[in-house]
Length: 446
Image 1 (cartoon, rainbow, N blue to C red):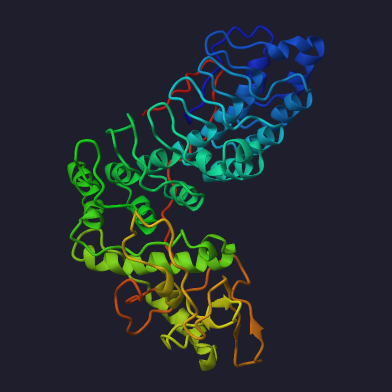
Image 2: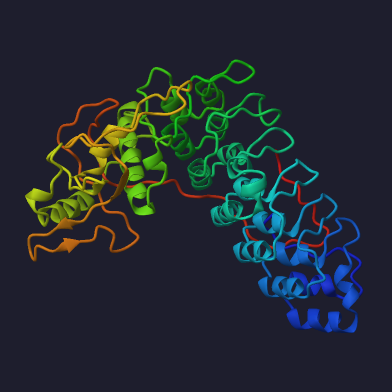
């Protein structure tokens, strides 16, 4: 979908070619002579000028066409794809935002695979488009009529949710965003891939260790079988994804799981949530070091310079600000309403569990280890430095602070062992960009 393509259509006015290459002056000239030309479509694929502009990221032309008022933002081409679907497919974030502002319907289904714009954004790995569509779903009529959770888990014609597609196509950032929005981590497909496949099966087939890390951290079941009776471990072995197979081996240690059912966790502010997620992922990376030891997939250790920098930062912190549970990490999380502070690792030790119980509808909220009062909310704490004895904001920039490696914490559901502090979220690959002609077939591979 990313190569330059020519307009192979009957385009006597030159409108479609001008739209494709962003010649807005020629577009204005053509429409001023005959305003009805804006409603014409290409011969074969039935693309409108709005389809072509959205797919090629021509935001000025998209804006001009929508401001006219006579152009429907939900025009359909031959495959019943809307301009919003094509913009999401090609990662044209500005066009996605503009179409949503123009009240484009995010609940339209195409006739190829029964997919929505959310499916397209997840499949092609365009996380910004995915985030914009999810944000629109929270505030639009979709949340009131359909329900946001139902929209996030919407299935295509073969029973695949956006999470299935993102996991299969190796899109870890999209996987994380969908899980964070309530995507069902153990949902099974219908006819997509092998019947009964979960996102973990599809990630094992695709060979993305980063997607597998995300899914396991959100409670994906390593023992869940597809319709053929295979667990994800066997799928990874079949496709020779040895690193994935090592993580999915049922005999390997259970990963720590993000406690999403807890209300005070799901309503965290972004800074506190990022701190806890970083600590959780690093705890699981320490687990991976043992599992992958001696293989070509070994997890790299933090560099010496990173460790030294973290120690330098720690030396500036008053001993009174160290966590009173482990006496090793800086207090980064504050418990409300009591105000007691502890480090991110010890906070997770109170909340995380190793293997989720699918029969448990909700979890009992933990209590503060200092005063035994219920934890109403968690926020980012402020520490004091010796130099001026003044508050230091842990988030002066969007970059997360580095976590120090603790000395001696036991393994298990209530505490952690050997947590290091180099955050690692997988790179996003496969961002396509390019032009689409008026008659190009917008068909993806299942």
